[in-house]
Image (cartoon, rainbow, N blue to C red; front, side, top):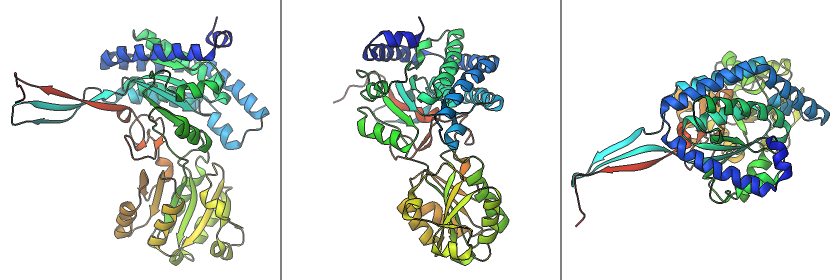
Length: 428
């Protein structure tokens, strides 16, 4: 009897409760696992994913056929799609995670007290992490590998549209764990598409889940943040901006803007709004607009932008707050750096912003005054990615201020504890 059949035959609450208990037990084993054991499992997982590429792609074809028949958006289909290159990229990410230094046990700080006590603050696992995500089947591999590296057990609840793909990838993860002698319950996947399982995870599964990480659209994040009874490491939508300062090199700015919007339109690091200095309207605006239109991007602009180029459609107030995840970009002409910062502070989601400029003072003010998780200078917003940050992969881009911020990799999935060493001290 496979897991899906078992789920049908049993009460979902009972099955989820068992998953929670198994994860808690596995977390205790992982906390004792050596770096060598975890790395052996990661090496095996990468190898199994490569070996079973045909099976993974066949499962993904099922998901793609179902998604196409449901007429899902192009951006959703792009996030769902796997091909040989994307499967290989999953394996490479896992190998990169394996090569990272093991965060567990790292000494973050150490100091001596006048009474002779030696105190260390060291990294420790969070415990059991529940990850709820949509569409992207590669998150199954990335999340599983990052949690394993950081010594955490994980319960994965993927999107219903990627159920077959994620299930096949999860089987690869289980095989890698087993080959290294680690419990296969260290990485579990919820074996049902039922949304009831999400509610149970948000309840904490009787204190078996220590933290929830949501990765998906605005409605998913909102539900998790509203209903979760355990801590959440979450991100809001990726409402990312590129600001072109009057000092920007025209060709550099054009290349950065086109890449930020059009490289992959369906990812959270894709730019959604372009802000151009009024002083740069004649010098920079025409080149950037021509390049975006040539790349197939629909442009919506404020009154000044539309007057400068009639190929733009008028933008509404809603456009400044929309994460398109599509080949659509809104453009606003702003009266200098302060106005650009004000727009981003008003409409941004705290994810990623970029400035194109050669004026160092303008760049430093942009970096200082904005509070988004990631700020870039003369580089595409599509670098908002854990892999590009050298983390191997990420679970998501956290936009909050508590615990983790920006790309959430293995190190961000740890807490810490204090080790206090004495020589018989007693407190007076």
